[in-house]
Image (cartoon, rainbow, N blue to C red):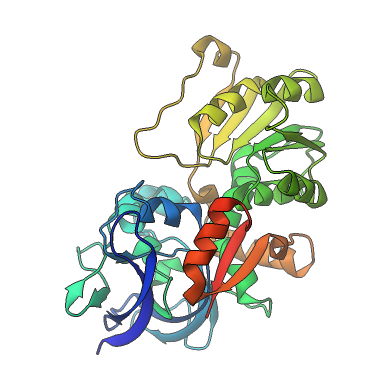
Length: 368
């Protein structure tokens, strides 16, 4: 039996979100019905809604959901009704990367999470007046009162921390933290620079502060975010609106270039700057996703001395391991995600979008 609920629907590229009544399919064996209590707003949602990334519209987005399990499919074993959960990305569970602990590089990651708008069999779990909508976004489509989620998207959390502080772990927080812990793995005494200190970049700063890295540099154009970066662990800040040559300043601070750099803005020009900010054998991790087809120019001779550029998806995370680990750090007061969050009623999603675009809000979280 289908379920009627409300969801924020994007009708076409560039249109605002509009709340409408939608129908959710009855659960399949591997699916979970979740009463959504909080859902983070991410730049990926804005890119899709704005037409920068292909996704079938009209559709329902949202990929940082958190809530309470209402019902489970007959084959579900991870959770049961009443469990508190965070909803993250989905994966097939059977390909080489999934079996090897790297589900963010699942063979079917792109269609199943970002651009397909449907389950693997081509059906969407969301419809409106008998017509299928783009859904199954990151296995959840959580800009709604309720969501049908893949079991592999669901992580049980045994904590009393507010769900609005946990929902950003689903994407932005684990992306920044995973880039540091899973990709860079800072050595004792090393240096790290983070370009762009929004939710992803600030999560990387917090993660780096828990490593043996000695020098942690934050680069941004917004002074208030740079101040927060200092409070969360950055040892140096660079205001890119005031300093014309950020790579030269990083070279000066580090005495020859940073050991590693994270590009979290999605700008190919900034990615080029990140490369030129590193020392020999420097490691550049690109987490910001520009529009499909975007390219960056890199001087090949400059990277010959062992420099490397690595793309990363969702922090190369295994969600049942990383998300509970961050929750434990939050409970201990060592990873203050709440410092990034501004809450809005789900009905106020368009105001949250405007505040995110203007920089007023670092991580808007929509609450039911």
